[in-house]
Length: 108
Length: 152
Image (cartoon, rainbow over all chains, first blue to last red; front, side, top):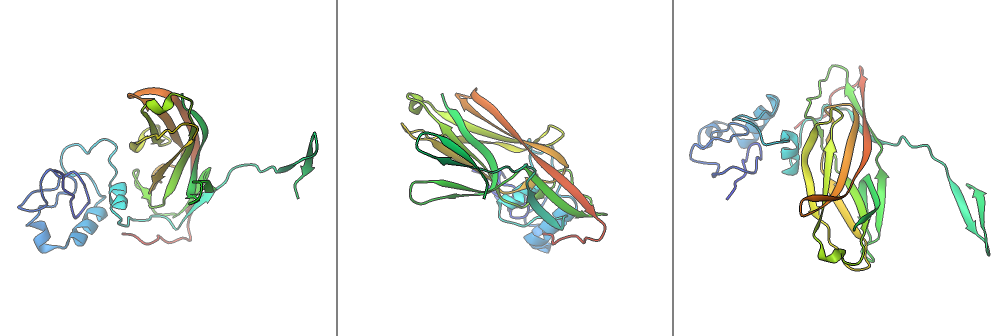
C-alpha cells in the first residue's frame, strides 16, 4: 500500500505519514516537523527552497510542480501572462458544389 | 493496423452528448509567456494550465482483437523528457473510430523554444504506429514593467 505525503503530495510513501517517518521527497518528519508547523506552512517552506527532492535520487522525470498540480494545489506562477498563440498563415476558401463540378469561391 | 486520422494539441475538447462528436477549441501552435525582467523561471517550472493532446484513430477488421496502447511524450527543447510518458489503452470497436484524449494539467515553462509532442501506438510494448510529432513553441518575453503574479 502506498500513502500520500500531506505536505508535498508525493503519492508513493511506503509507510503512513506518522510515527516519525520521513518523506523522501520533502524531508518532513511526521510527528516532529508537523508538530510545530501546519502541512501548508511546511509545503510553503519546501516550495520557497526550490521544491527539491530530499533523499537519494528522485524518480525518473519527477516534477515537483506537476506533483502539486495533480493534487489540486496551486504552484508559483513566475509569469504575468500565459497566452496560447497561433503561428499559422490563414487562407480560406469556400467550395460550392454545383451539379457536376466544384466551383472555387473567394472567402466571404 | 491503426491509422491516424487526426492528432493535435488544443486548449479544450468538447464531446457532444449525442454521437460523441468532438469539437476542438484553441488549437495550440505557440505559447507566449510574459515574465518580469528580473524573474528566474526554474528549469523544471510548470504553468498550471490544462491542455489536451487529442487524436482519432481509424481501425481495420481484426484490430478489435489487439491490445493497442497510445503513448504520448512531451519533450523539452533540450531533448529531455517532461514528466512521464502517458500510456492509454485504445478501445476498438468494429467500424468505429477511436477518440483519445490525453489531458495534461500543466505546461512546461522552464525552457524557451520548440517543445515536441510525440505520440505513437504500441502493441505488446512494441512500436506499431508512428511516432507522430508536432512542435509547440514557447516564447518567453521579458517585461521590465511587469510584476510577478500570484504564487502558491
